Image 1: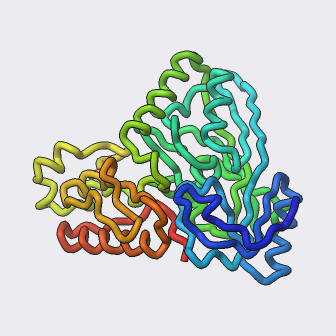
Image 2: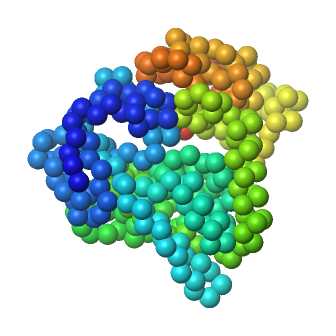
Image 3: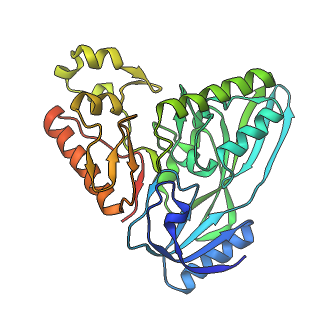
Length: 315
């Protein structure tokens, strides 16, 4: 384990945006994590846990912090009766986890085909797609507190307080997810591979993956929060979907509003999928934040709808 200084965060962001981190530490064990936290206290800087960098906007100025990244690769499973329990390190990517599940015919996570990012980040935000969410298969989550990183905290599914793109871990910034245990079931390998690839192909076709981006910028809008006058809009009614409860997709709202192609500098709302802001060249964090603020303001004024960011904007 090494301590690096002034590491450009754009190199760890799918947006390719972000200034330098004052310190950067990769860890692969509880002891190394404990050391990293102790080091942050020693240099009187906050620590920042970095996952896959797929849903985070770093500031152009960088972070005066100790950025800590999990690089452990634990992946194992065991069968108990009709259930299969998969133990995975928080830093493992969903792509790696799905490869493992397909190889061992462990079904239940096919909905995550093509989902970017790390397992820990996905569980923290209860990531979801294609009518599935992390909460559907999470059995237990292991975390540690920065006050005592050697003491494990184990929560079952209920205690994680999962909700739409949310969990208890968003309310506990000093708690660090280290392991996740999923409860899966035996599956047909060929059917699983086909289902996973279908999700990947869908993303390639519908999402602007040819540009740097950090996924959907805003959460979809719960139907109950759509003003009654707009609930009667035939266009909105036709596009209403379950995600997993009734919502108006933000992409539909933006399409209706004519937001596609709107830009601030090189930050642009995708013409392919308007829920995405893309880095069309050399976009800055400031440009992205200005674009986010502009469409939020317009959406409130035009539709009386308050949008909520799904991504993490670090100031």
